[in-house]
Length: 116
Image (cartoon, rainbow, N blue to C red):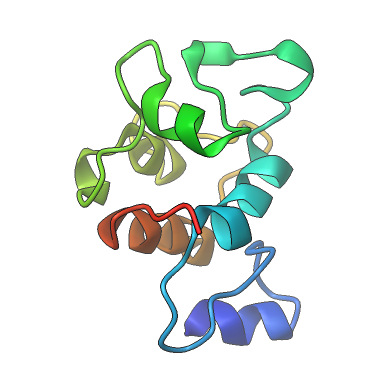
């Protein structure tokens, strides 16, 4: 809900906020975030650094040199959340994502990482 408020004011990097009571989905909420902040290095134009491809639902869930980047239902165990939160290498390298953006990814994973 905070993400929705900040995005409306232009104070967030969440491309599509989640409406109150809705569950975030990959297609509507996560893909635009990953396209904007991750795809240049992780899938854009053939680059797949770290073996993680951020450009498609199935590849987001299953790819990665260190194993799958998403552990459905467990954001704390998901590498994608840990690196976005600054645990080890900070991603994206252009600058850390907002707490709203990281929270959106955490909520999506916690809710079962739905595609639609």
